[in-house]
Image 1 (tube, rainbow, N blue to C red):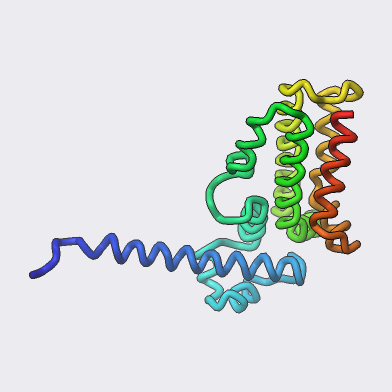
Image 2: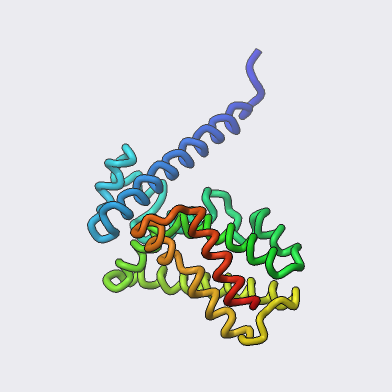
Length: 215
């Protein structure tokens, strides 16, 4: 008995969508690895295509040019996957916003922040190094700095609501301090260059934030 008209179309469409997602993931993974090992300028679209096992045209069709690849790889590294949820929308961040004790807020924030900068620190270094020579990367660099400041402002608001902020700093200066500590370059230096463990970094970060923000 013949199937219903069009009954196979959603199935085939689903397969194609999954294949496209797999290809895009492979291209992004290859781009991120090459950007961090070779640098942005030294990584060509042809090299990305070869590493991903696809054609040059497929890189543009499935993903995009180098600026898009760098931005998307960075955004995904921040959260750790390709789900369309920002770090602030993730369960651990929502749980943090339910807390009312300053020290507990800082401990959870330090854990979230340490995980995010661990994933993104190498690409952050790539963006910083390439921002002087490429206007698209320079725009990405500025956007990243705005995001870091916005994240700091959110933590200030959370600590202020808990009446936990140090009286030594006003809200603006407190956000300035957080923006120093949420710089992925610190992780890149201490863990990547100096050999700290991730656990040692997270412990130092939590203690430093308590000292700077609550004492």
